[in-house]
Length: 77
Image 1 (tube, rainbow, N blue to C red):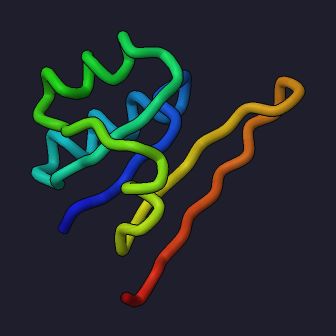
Image 2 (image 1 turned 90 degrees about the horizontal axis):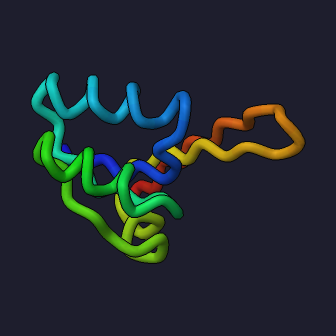
């Protein structure tokens, strides 16, 4: 299973690393290239937001006004 992951900050990076260690294939995106590079070293691929959003599973973690919102999306296509 391939999982798209958008947002590799305080919560997202550890979650994505754990998924990578568990053997899942990840496609990741973040606005800080160093976070993407760190996940690529763990075996993840980088991808555009559009590419990730068209996948079957993706998880996005975003910060707004110092509160974290978590969004998950399952597309059956």
